[in-house]
Image (cartoon, rainbow, N blue to C red; front, top):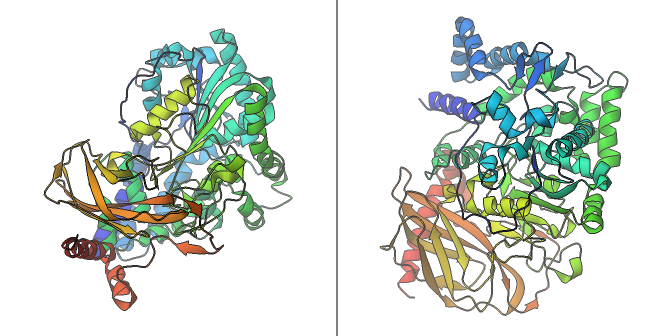
Length: 629
């Protein structure tokens, strides 16, 4: 039964990871002063459709057609599923892989990186790819990008002034940056404007950053925002093709929780089941995907710089792939190293409002042990310096660059933003998964202000939008901050911890609040029920130390009236309350000493019960200690 459940969950996870999620938050409209410049949407990877010369759409992928292909060979598919339940993923990899090659093989590129078949986007002309024109031609929304963002944009701009950049996402960053340069000229001619604003996402962020590095001196852009940008590559591209796959199923489930906007913590299912079979499936399918994608320039530009040379040596032939290597070498060795300097120069020289929003606090789902938004490492997206995932900087850590005396270390001490491409214009959202700015009212409002107004010029412009913040997506259920302080920081002015129920539907009872790193204890009444949106102010006993640079974690345990009633959330805080303490250079483990350790901990982890039992123990210990408060 357990093997069947593992296989069933594996299939559900893989299928769900292919879905496009919708539904976001709403927020108050922007104030006056909204820009009239047209907006160009530069989409995420695979966002643009590709067509044959006869107009046949060959991308995006038709999941239904693949499913029919599997049913056409029902006997082999049945054997493959049977083998999978027995722990052998080779045949299911072959069955799925054959469908990948059959349905997507037309997307292959030659060894030099050029397309093996004559394919192109639907159009490269602004007159045909503005949202008004596309909606008239495709009422179902096909070929229109980032619909949730566009829903907000339409409050301020006519759809004819929102443009959808169509690119051949298989090609490298410089190829598409050249296309973007031409497209901007087409938009300016069609709209009559002298500049554009750009909203870019993921792969679109890499293309946009490359365009700015190469052609920013054209001075045809006013506001630019890059969300979850793959500027320096994407770890998820390296791991499947060149690295060892260690699929993080729990991170993927939490990714799905945020994407479908549910309040239940269904990731608990994975703590009681072993789904390592997903790794076996991916290993089995990998060769087939490589047949289709192995010569895509974009895949090679996604290889992080520190992994690029090794991946080339492993997977490319310097003679056969000379053309492909030359193009990707140019990106890695000539263009990418200049991007930070170029972005800062463009801000200073032309006043371009260039901004980055990135999520962090998750491991790469394909196995790379670096802090990320689950798809792109934080260092690639922002240029920030981070420890390996699961570790943090020690108390008293001194940031690498001075940044004119501005403190650039995240409250949980896992991010040093002083090394960013744009140290004063990069926002970090802990707990936000890749490209999910649309599922948090805070990030959506920040996006609109950065894109359409001049209200925010850096991370210090508006106290409501600090450089570091924990996500308030409803899938996290609760969000906590100290009063009289910037989110994530604490000093003697802070008298209470404010805990907010950020669910949309579920009521919450806070059952315990545990602080590790500070000698303070909170007073909690577990009978108090918080309706969605309601907050409670919790007093504490003890003193905030008269030091700066000391880190603490606070975990809020709660009961919710939904299908998974028991839950918790941990947020990091830094004390900024006096003279800086002296810190060592060593890294420390996130979370400090575990409550349960040794053989018992290993047993519970093997059963998938470790976190649940730890939560129960923490709540009971809190209840016992509360008697003396």
